[in-house]
Image (cartoon, rainbow, N blue to C red):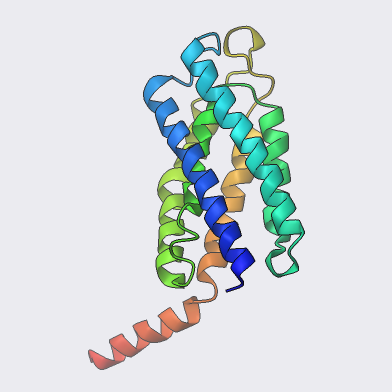
Length: 191
């Protein structure tokens, strides 16, 4: 692996670890139904959202300037995330950063495809999709006065669920023929 890509993955993991940690702290200290008038909640929100915007801009720059790491899907996802964070001013924004845990192990498991795919699939199935579903079904305030929310979150939740479904498909598509052959072999050997 190219040294510059390895450094990028390591720095990316540091960014994500900070944002996930602040998000977990926010989950433990601030309700998503709190307003941003609480000093502690405002600090958590401002810190995490500022880091997130900085991270997205930095990552778009790094990915765009490296042809070997140019991923149109990642750039589109980051731009969509920036637009989403600009349109949503609730504590939900800071709490959603825990969904970034999917990319937390990219550097540690960079040369181990199956463990990384299992880790990412677990994060998608047990963190990202349930979180987006919860925010779509249970937390959808549209009033500006109490929750300080500008828009309905349902379209964003649906888009992120569809994106995560696509990620699951693209994670397992390369290894499915191998896994299916292994299953067939085991079945034939057990006869």
